[in-house]
Length: 318
Length: 266
Figure 1 (cartoon, each protein chain N blue to C red):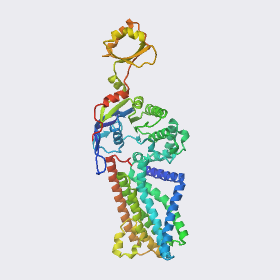
Figure 2 (cartoon, rainbow over the protein chains, first blue to last red):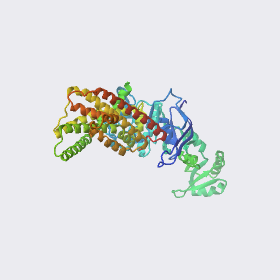
Figure 3 (cartoon, chains in turn blue, brown):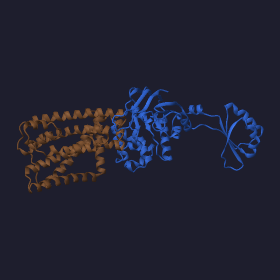
Figure 4 (cartoon, rainbow over the protein chains, first blue to last red):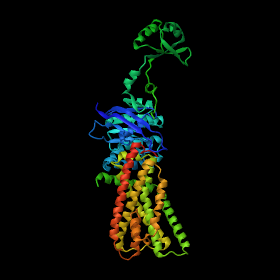
């Protein structure tokens, strides 16, 4: 897949210019990153990890100290759309359509092209009946959707979203996540999204880069990360009697008993040394004809992976 | 001008108009405040002067006041607007969507001033009604008068651009803007014709000052004052210098704000 955005050795420090301003801070420290075209790439990190600075440097709103940002998939700069301040990205006093007309013309879209484009986007984002409502009277979720609609005017090739679902209720967040996936599937858009909501990243991104102290600590597809951090942990539930029968034979295994609300039942998490160690365990279970009411392999969540990756190094570098 | 910029201009005209139509009371009360402020100055001055202000002085007062109002619009278009955009969160979005921000700001000034022109005309009418004194001018004075007004305001707009540039970096320039606004009170009301010619020549380089002097001369004489177009030439040079300096300062501050990552700060 062609590379949409290529970042090499990117550095950015915010310097202290006046005595009363805060100390100099390194926001991005030798960032290297390649974002494939036509998919959603997640830039993950805690507060202060350098995500927003990175996305603003890609948008040209912050000038890097050194390093380069290029867009190999396009001749020159791609058509860009961005939502950086969420629902604050719009004129609250103007109506939905007036916002569209303003930003559309600012982007150079002809009015006769803007009307069908806007109608399609408003329909897609469920805002068609809110066309004449002032933006300030919309709910937070709708304002956020409108901000994305505005970013999509002029059919951008690269969409930059900074925390697009932050502060939204579950339903609005899920709607935006679904729409972003649709946009990539139907229009081949490349989206870079920053978030510290791991469940959002896990739901929409194919690849993620985990940032810490201005660097990418780890970058891979979510599937590969899950495999990489996958453990040979199994969860199983059986009767107390069955557990009492096999317990002496489990002495070679590391296991813990989990809280189990069902009376007469026992839930266990068994940690295996490696994936092959499952076969002797299955033999024990088979030999004692243990009936399992639950048996599953435990997968790490992106959140757990994120915590593992980011643990141990200092966050900000003054 | 390319079609891209014409589209930007259309967008700005419509945005300004739509916002104004949504909040007509804001415009009405703004105008009323300016009217009451003038009434306070005028009737206060008349009382101090023993109940009478000459027709010439009343005319001078009205021209100065209307021009000052116009200058405030120009200053705010360039400075307070940038501050407001940063506060409401749309500044970065405009930076991303528009081909360049500085021309957008100039277009915004043009848009605000063209709407402001009607407001100033209305204010001027109200002032003439309340004072009972009509500003006298010949038909032939219209073009020279407009030249003086446009060039004076262009100079102030350059000054406003410098203020807007500072607001990109310092964020809060409201007080500084107030100081400049009230400083413009001096050229608006002080009669510089009493100064010696050399001092007049020097002071004429300040934005707004030469234009006011020319307008006063224009309304106080029946024919075009001698050397008027030469003065307009100087006014053009001054206005261009202020506009260029304003643009250069703005570009420099824009770069600085992008280095500091402070465009969206407020």
